[in-house]
Length: 473
Image (cartoon, rainbow, N blue to C red):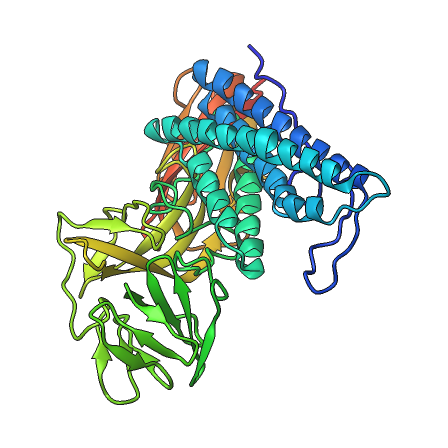
């Protein structure tokens, strides 16, 4: 049975239809808008909701048929459409208040308010919950990409910082693009962005995936939320849902859970003390060294308790998260490789990122830790099995050829551990394996299933599968 045809439309690079360009609200310089423009904006919001609901329904049908790879693609498209909807809804209430007409402006604004808050917003909330439920059911079956992106969308909705919004939008776009491309190029190979903590947890902002690495938002939605204070020595501080985050010029962060940031650069700690953060520094263990010589542990006081096997981890917004079991712990800090797979964990590897998680004890919550995230080197993979040019040799009743696993991006940091080939005549004889190349002798024409397993030099296992047509005659 043929797979259902994908309905691919422009999602994040631009709207799929013309959206009226309405000016952002400027309180100091109010702009009078026409009611018809705002009605058109609300019509487009409704259209995006309809498209997203349609993609969700398609995803549910595909999941019901156990086609989890294309179900994931549909779910990702539903999230991407919902993001476009959110971008319009972000400004629509302000646009409503800017309407001025020669007729009854109060009645017009009231009518449009009712449309937004009585119809569009409830539709959005209901659809978000339905997509979230679908995402969690996919995650339970090993497919985490949709949950990853819906969490990113929630983070986008919960921050006013435009830089953080742009980064989150880019991360959603990258996952939709990468997983959709790989699922379409390798049908039957699955569509999972299994990204360790981020994709397998229920939080909104701590991680993300992109070809340029996951942005170090640290779960606080970035500087600017509530006001960033410059502290000198390249240091800045900004408030978040769980307290205060201090960041240096290299992107290293330290959390002070339960603390309150003051405009003068001081912070009131969870224990009631007020300290001056100016000219402080951050050490590799995520502690803040104050200019007066005092060291603040990750709980905002001298020293900090370390997590144990029973510890509970949360993002800065309070939502639960899981630190991958294969991460290494030392001095209360977890480091490891965050992996993005298509087809489930251990299958087609498409990205690796070196990540550090710094848990900080949450105030008034025993054995609970707020986790800050730091990102290091990242690299992307495009593995493919190809026939080595000029290696084919035909003889009566057989064909011998050399096959190679290569990365189309030119990376070489991987090792092949095993080749497996099966076809209509069983398994052909192999020579020179394991290794990046092998030689196979085929004695019958037909389609052969090639499977190559290996590991990167960062310790990430992978399996690459490809169907190879062979003509012996």
